[in-house]
Length: 390
Image (cartoon, rainbow, N blue to C red; front, side):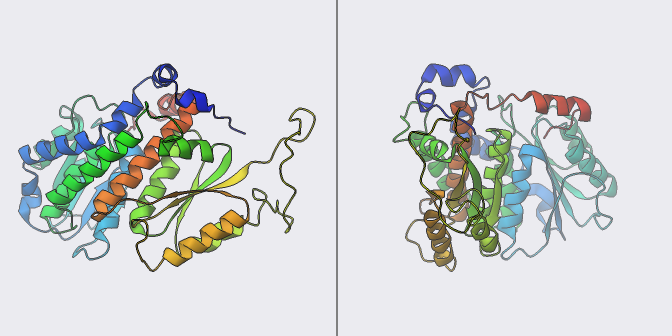
C-alpha cells in the first residue's frame, strides 16, 4: 500500500529535489498561462478562424495531456451548440470532413503524430484549420501552408499536463467567436482569478493542515481512489483526475458522472475495500497493536473524490443524489474528499476544480518520493512508439 510521508509535503528542499521539472511552479502559472494565451491568440488573429464563419462541424484532434482540450470543448458545446463537435485522437480523418468543416489540432510540441496527421489530411481536403502548439514546429508549418490560424504557446512549456491553459484558452476563444460555446473574455478573466486564488492556497510553502491539496493527497493516499462528478463541469475535472493520478502520482483511479455512475459507485461500497470487506457485515475496526510483519497487511480502503459542478449550498437536480452517495460512502467507512468550486461562470468553476485536482495529484507523487515528471516505464513506452507526444 502506498506510503505518504506528510513531513515531505512541508519540506521545501524535498519538494524542490524531487520535482525535477518544477511541476508545482508550472501549475501555479495557470492564471498567467491564460493571460499570455489570450494575448497570443489575439495577435495571431483568432477571430479570423474559419474566416469568421460558423463551420458545418468541428473536429478536435488531441491526445495525451492535450486531450483535456477536446474534453472541455465537447462538454461546453454540448448544451446548445448549433453544430456537432467531435473528438479524434488519430487518423484516419472521417470521410465527411471537407471544406465546410473546421479541424482543430492541438500539440504542445507541434510534433505529436496523431494531431499532425489529422491537420495534414484536413489541409489536403480544404477544411479550415486551427492549430495550437510550438511556434517553430511541423504543425505550425502545416497550418501556414493551409492558410489556417496557428496559435503559438508561450516559452518554457515543457509538459502538456502543466500547460493545459496555454493549449485550451485559444481554442475556447476561437469557439466563442464562432458562437459554439458561451465563453467570453470576461469569463476567462474570472477563470484567471480562480486559478490565481487556488495557486495561492495550494502553494508549496503552505503547511499540509491548511493546504487543501496537500490534505486531500494525505487523505487519499493508501486508498483505492475513485472520482465522482455531479455534472458535466465536474465530469471534465473527474476525467482529468483519473489521468493525473495515474500519470503523475502513479495511482490508478476510476471516475464516473452522476446519475449514470451512481449505481456503479454505490456497488463498490459492498466490496472488499470498505468496512464490510465483501462479507455484508461491518468488520472489526483496525487494531492499533497489529504488527504488519506478523499479522496480515491492512487492506486498503476505498477513497471517494467527490467533485461538484456548483458552489457549496447551490441547489441542483443532482445535489440530493451526490449527498446520498457520500452518506453511503461514509457509512461504509470510505474516505471522502469533497471539493466545491467558488461562484462564477462554468469555465471559472472548472478552472478551480482542475487546479485542485492537479495540485493534489502532484503532492501525492511528491509525498511518496516520486518525481511527478519522470517515469522510466513511460520513457520505455515512448522508445517503442517513437515521438507521439502531445
